[in-house]
Image (cartoon, rainbow, N blue to C red; front, side, top):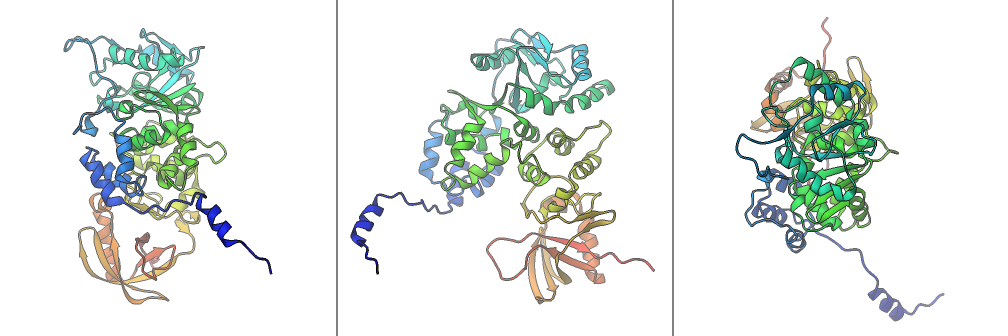
Length: 475
């Protein structure tokens, strides 16, 4: 029998770094962020996900690097402010309609230089901006273009990188809050179909977030945290901009850091920053894996858009689907699902939004995600989707309150079991008729709960299921 010197082994192990055990700290993180001025929705989401294991001391190290007055309202921050212009006398930069038409004809990048001159596909190359319109660089509401002082501030930032031309959607694509002419709508549709190539071909995609621009650091972890607390990561259009970018860089007060550097740094410490690493890895461009519908659904579930149509339209460049100006949100989401029918069936248990009109088992949009279970794919058929489910008949509704009902279930493993079922707020607001139809189905004995996993034993977190009505063929 072999013998071991246990004393020597213990002495050697004392110097060996053990894996750090981190405990959830959700509540403390949420209140810490709220006290710092982080909007409630962001504070709640990030305390449950990206920062759920963080301590207040670790957060202090990040916030101490922010050049921000105490009590600042994060939601009102801007990236750049107009300078030196009297009210109503601003000097604006705007391309001619002929310039926009020229870029649409060749699906090219209409770029601008520091002096306000425009060029399609400049030979020197260009950088594309990824920004939030409401933070200062959006199109002028009166259709005058972009204030020249804003343009010069952008170039003050990016010129040290050798950038002489920039592409920004607020100048290159007709938009803003005013109504567009028929020609402008057609040009906008054409140029949306060019966006994928523009972001792929850009020498840099420069991420401009008002909060990150106040971070006096390029430390990868600090940049990751502040990016998650900012507005840029909450917008629909910025998802496709980062997913398509070949060389994305994040601007901070003290310089730039490649998005890939942030991702790799988090990836190298997954035990310390597990949720934060997952968020950035999902956003990082990956040509080997491509972009699947489950990837896009999770990536866009918490994002917002000023125009509801953008919840679908912003996905088209990402998925390589051609946009047409006559699409409404229902047509657009149907096209999104048709682009990846196999992956679409994996999203049936996407909880938050109501169901689509076609296909009826799919979410109406990816906006409003509350929970999701990505399931094994089914078969998309003309009258629905076919796959195996764990099925429980709903015998009765015992009681209900806003947002929840208690159901009496019956199945091979359950008989008379009571289950608390949460109904999403979005479904209650946007599709109350579906709840009424389900109540009717329960009375008629045709209501069922479909799940992808057993309902027993009990567990801490909710399971995601689909309440359906059994179709009965008329005789």
